[in-house]
Image (tube, rainbow, N blue to C red; front, top):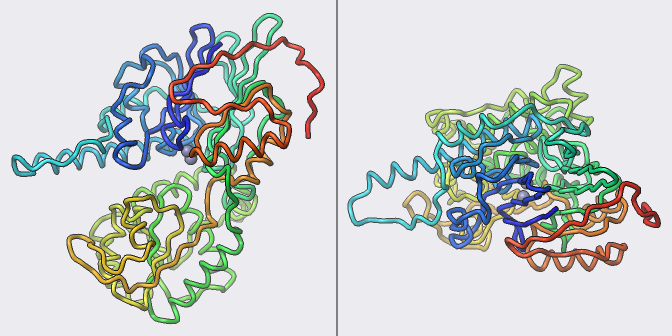
Length: 479
Ligand SMILES: [Zn+2]
Ligand SMILES: [Zn+2]
């Protein structure tokens, strides 16, 4: 049995691990490389294996860095089944469709460009909407949490809640042979100890091998409650100043977090009443409807709301803006609107239009609630740029800037250690999905807790997994 690492190896994006069980080849995630042009250009490169040789794909969740290259895999010859939870299937369809759609828009733009004017093609997503349609036909009967799915004779996979985004899973693959049984656990992305909308992660107790993410292996998040208080404070202050609040929002999970907080504060009378709220993102609206379809997978407080026939994301002042015309009308909604719009890093999307209106208004507020990558407009504003170009026009930055960082959908170092603490020490662990600093810091931390055999694989590295006898050697204790 062999395991190889074809993405998120010594970096964060492009998750893609290949488990080869005597020629039955399971790909765990098939993610897009995201970031600077140099990293993004990896998406056009060969996978490091023959896509036609893959027997099955397992998706841990619907973020692009885990599912974003799946249509390319299909286009390159993959013809097997794709296993995922039901929400992951629906969310992946939205996410992949959006990525392909953006790509087609870019190509149209290119066709209309005068001859000789070329843009670098390194940011091209290597598939089209037709490929996404083909891809969705590969999804089979959705997996349920904690219920084993048979992949092949003697090969089963069980999905466990990972508490990261709706439908996210850690997946344990069990390979059974006469007298031997080997359990390999893939963490997927793990949520924080107290996710806003979901139940916390619940890993299986015992695995022989663990492949785990370490995005924040070297740091602790700011307190979630403090961040909520800060957000509430900025909303109230801006209202008092007669200003608008603009929040660049990621469509998946963060937008739903915010709607849930707003609704809660509204019902507790902690937010002023006469102020419109706009969710100005068709993708975020679609994702919110998927969340509404799976109340049983949401945390207790949300489930309770659904039981009372109340939707935990909706309140009377909230409006969903689907069309561009509707989006433009927000401008006339009065001075005190709260606007959630994509993109989350202000690198495109409808937020640009609203920012262009409000950038030089010192009464309004711009609130960043997520990571702003190097090279994005969001990062430039956050770093204190005095003037910026938005939609072709130079604007003075006079809007109030706030960065509130406690809303991560990712586990921090303490959460990762807690997740590990819930299982027996495995024979060997592999750390992936982290920057160098985070990987080494987390490996050191793990060593202190008794996880001694921990490896950080290189891209395309293959390791042999020794199969285990059925009666696992004793002496390892659950901590
Ligand atoms: Zn993720
Ligand atoms: Zn990820």
